[in-house]
Length: 411
Image (cartoon, rainbow, N blue to C red; front, top):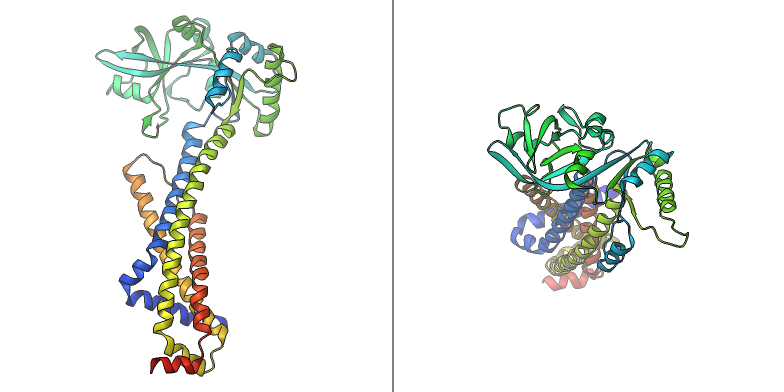
């Protein structure tokens, strides 16, 4: 109770000082406000984009990993080497893994190419044409909304059928149920058997401009020279690593790689993509920490100067308090609390500004923003800590004043 009473007065004094000197208070706290708002906005952007990437870009399906010609490569020289070393993943590779792997629940194939689609007078360019095996319906994140997916019978007979995305359904068949209608894909007629659930957009780009066709029909139209993407689904999250190891071992055996030779193919999952992305955002966050630190130091120095001026203005008050029995630690605590409260108020204003910026960005742009509550608490803690750190010198100066000298100075 006593400590609570000791804190109530300096907190009240600090808030009254901010209220009675609004312009000076704003200028004093500007550095803290800018640093906190910058910190929160950057964290909100990184947090929002991380979730967005995981949900919209890196989402491969439940417990799914890819086996492809190349791993994730970020170096140009490494890519050139891999382009010479890595063989294409073929249909024979798919059949071998599908028939001989013991751990996976499913092994499917997907191939993609951009093409042109047309229905009557309506046309769309750069539509993603996807050749898939029938079991991709249980692997892929894209599922039918109406109608059906590609079937085994479609694949075996190389049927000219397609399941289309929402963009094709709404733009090529306005006001009409597309199922059963004909669609031209790169000039060849296909019957629409299904419409996919809406996927949405990623960074402003629609993810619903696609048409699924049977993989054998795809090979018939575009040939079999392209490397294929194997989508391998583990039985559960706890089986992912073992399933990847089994797939890697079989591919290495098929390619007669010795133990000291590197893989000449790539295996990666959502966690790999997210790790790569977070490494990139980590670099951005580190750079922003430097910017925020500069603002914090500037804000702290301004608070220290204002607090020094406050000590001078309140010299007589300090002398009276000491004459009435206030101890060295009482004065020290008073000024430290005042500095911390002022900085915390600046932090709170910065948090409010950051929330406003994040809300405006979310409402007017496609940039995803999410403000984590721990980031807000961290920002407030940092603000108060800056106030305490830069308030130590003014507080010690105030606490070291002698009551007689302090009272004489005001006379």
